[in-house]
Amino acid sequence: MRNEMHYELMATQSVFKKRILEEIAKTCPDLSPGQPKVLAFLMAEPDSIQCEIAEGCFIEPPTLTNLLAKMETAGLIERVRNDENRRTVTVSLSEKGFETAQKVKRAFAIVEARALKGVSREEEEFLVPLLKKLRGNLLKESANA
Image (cartoon, rainbow, N blue to C red; front, side, top):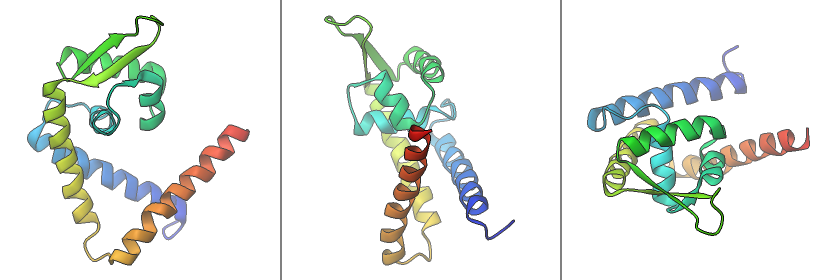
């Protein structure tokens, strides 16, 4: 099974996620596993609506609703209802959330640097577009199903 693409992708993702969560726990021990990617998303895409966050973070909408409720209680985010469409809620980072998101981004950078040790610049520049292409193919496939 080793050396097969599916195995290598799943194993790498599993180890990468574990190392990310370990690194984040050093400075943000109260974050649950789904919260770091939401914080990073909101840092990159401020004032997003919930469906954008769910899509961008690959989280099912009901799961995201529960996650955001916990993040709001923890003071990490603020949710504001749209006056024109009461069903639309804009989510943004609070000051505490922004500070926490910066710590999360640093943890991401630390783990990425470890993962890329011994990888050439050319290999790194090839890797990200390749992963995006693979993900895009799989997303197109599920949209056409």
